[in-house]
Image 1: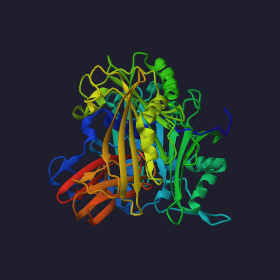
Image 2: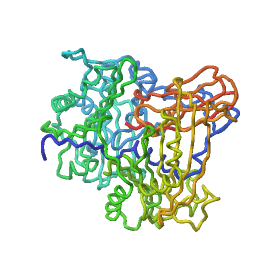
Image 3: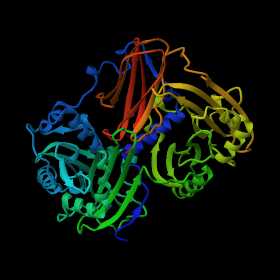
Image 4: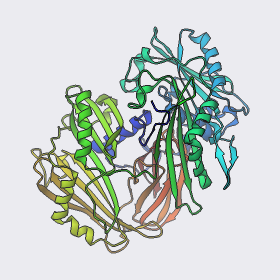
Length: 596
């Protein structure tokens, strides 16, 4: 393998991506998740309720080393980036909290503490993973003088290290969380308790043990700095923020095409950096994985993904062909049941019928197993497989909801047919400063359009076309929304439906409404819109799934009309968050997903 293998793709989806994909799956297929949650009493069942009544970080963790509750909570959330562990807070054995502020430690110190602890708990368990986050996220910043100005650089140390151990004979996985030179949390889990999708795609016995003489996290950092990370840190010359995760193990299957079973145990340094100019207008972000031999310190590969990548937009049939080839090797009995892509452009430019990203969902009807793929530029960059039973029963689509899709005509044909049927004229009549978004949905949900389709209808392309204009206060002053339907088998135009029209100024809504944020999933910014039918006091708050408030986006009196706010999630971890709108005794909740 070449020592500097730079490939502009992302690693396959981990646990967060699995959650994200499942949410997309539910949103697309389950009517229950598409609807908003509306309550008239904030404390009623099903609402977010009062912030003080929400679940919080366990007290023993909230006081770690004198950290704030938000920092301690961030440690808990980031631990799920480990290839094995995710937060199972109710099942953890707390061995005691550390009091007082302690210094971050390097990986060697963390592993030595974990190994000494495991010598008493299970001497037959072998270490297979070590995970930590660089302390640059907290108070230990180190500045490097450059020709232009000081730049923040990482330290190679972490306030916490989580070590995973495997006992092959007893089928146990052990997790030891080391903070300040002590194990403060410990858990042993029987492998049979893991859902299938959380296990590696190889026998656990084939996972390599972490060798005694692995290079330290600071040495791994030095290799990354000399192989491109130093250049990436220059984004902090603007108003910058970055995170750096350290993962040591032999999880070669996370990087097909780069690593294989012969690859050594390696450090995976995940760099996630963002920056803005003084006006907050320029946004630059980058993700990069540095894969480093855990013994020699040599660079094995480097993956780079940035906001400046020039990604190719492709027609769906191109992505479909790529996914179909892999599905034949994975499960030839699975059938396509859903696809989704999106195209955004500033008018008067015309859309192309292509998308940079496509999601395709396949389903094995006999085994009731779901296969989800995401592509960028036509290449698969994320895969998730899970049984339908993984979806909570109340959110699961009803029996018979899924139908196999046979497709002869792709997204370009669907767009061209729609343009000829009237969409072109509607786009041309839009204001010159309008923005348009077209969602390309391929499915068989005939019940969405009972006046056009019935149960005998073929699968079809559903083009959701949204045309909007916003003023300087980000209020929507123009909105046209159209649905165009095209048969995916015969290519015939089926019909069009206009759902909303707010042409000619700011329309007063007839009810309070909270819209789905856009884009979603997002990184790092998204826009949230809400509508009020009367002047009233409004609060718009963002919570994590533990019920902790992470952002306050609005708190004051707003006029009747359409309002919006841009939410910057740069300081948050990847995952699912809930944003809640409260006004006039009504509470509206929606979910959004941060992807980094």
